[in-house]
Image 1 (cartoon, rainbow, N blue to C red):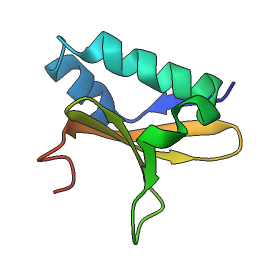
Image 2: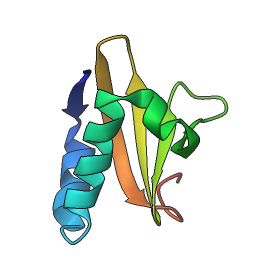
Image 3: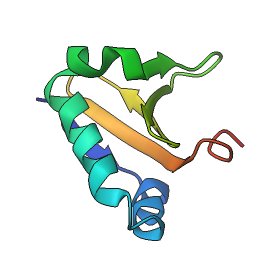
Length: 82
């Protein structure tokens, strides 16, 4: 299982969207435990080392190393890429 690191902006987004925060945390943990299980929901972003995980209308932007998942952004699908 990979270690999950939330950057300040991602932690603030979880506090802001409290109604869906448990669902988002569960998806991040599930991906950290078994990346193959959520392979259809993860896409590499063009021109960036980031990946995107879809969770309903929300997107989780993260970088992945061999031992860590560094979550840099969480937000609604329309505004997360700005």
